[in-house]
Amino acid sequence: MEASEYRFMAEHEDRHWWFVGRRAVLAALLDGLALPADARILEVGCGTGGNLPLLGRYGQVTALEMDAYARAFAQQKTGVDVRDGVLPQSLPFVDERFDLVCLFDVLEHVADDHAALAAITGLLAPGGRLLLTVPAHQWLWSVHDQHLHHRRRYSRAGLRALLEANGYVVDRTSFFNALLFLPAAAVRLVDRWRGRLTASGAALPSAAINRLLTCLFAAEAPWLRRWNLPFGLSLLALAKPIK
Image 1: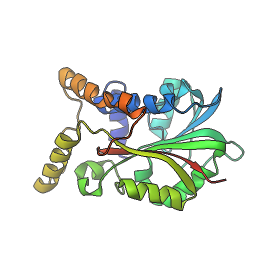
Image 2: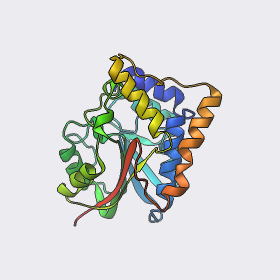
Image 3: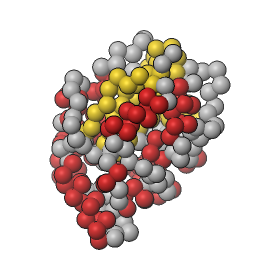
Image 4: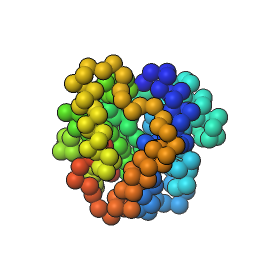
């Protein structure tokens, strides 16, 4: 991502509706995993560390981040061991294995997502699981994706096939961020039609709008504890390697 995006993340991820709402969804998923006591958890591509306190509620957390500014900010902010590395070719975990590996909106940035998933397999302990989120629907591609240096968006069937092709048993896939799907999709398509060079709605909105959007996004969390959603702006997957 651009350096400016990491700085925006550092400044706003504790209160911006998208980050806060996504953490509510992630918490609902993590609550249902029944991880072992003192679970070893790795977040790959932790950015400026906004998810690390949440993950720390479920076990002992380690993180990986390639950007020097984000890595230093995350480590100073959280005290978590945040290591330098790049997925898939440079992972500093030679003899370490994890009960849960998390990739939250990371896979779409990696040139070779097949190699990335293969590399993750080697980091998982027996019985370990992969939890990931990615942006959905290639037809929603817009300047928003270009700005964030995305390489692709995913279909539900395509994500499942990708995981299975790389030796995973897929326990679950679901869309999420459904309540905001129609307005967000409309904005993305209008941006594309107009040929905009910057994405609409990228900045932190007013406090009232930010609270509303946070509530709408987070409202999906109780539903996702038990059921899947048939549409949304993003996809989640829970999988484990065949061993």
